[in-house]
Length: 162
Image (tube, rainbow, N blue to C red):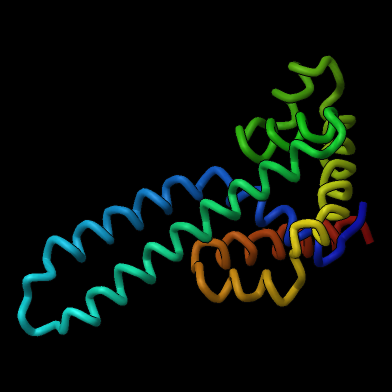
């Protein structure tokens, strides 16, 4: 099993995919409440407009990221694409996927890792670099938290296999 930095990045992005819609909905609520309560005379209109624009830009960036991830997953071989959708997007266990696909859960685990490796190979097309990913981590605390969790998982797996 490959324990590369890019595999951890791939896992983080794919595990975050289902939560993007919730974050976008949250940004919509913040935009609405900011606009609704903008009558407060102590806050300059420019500052309120800047907050709304920043939240709208965050929302658009996440929608764009979600679309890009889905497009790249769909460009993979069908078996890789299917296993990524089941495991990361639909949050099915390896046992559930094994039952669906008529395989063992151990085979599904290997399929997930092969699919991740194939997905990582698409990073140049998505313009994902360590630097661009670090920018994403700086902007979004919830993605940073997921990434830290993935690092811990990989560290524990690495210590088990050594």
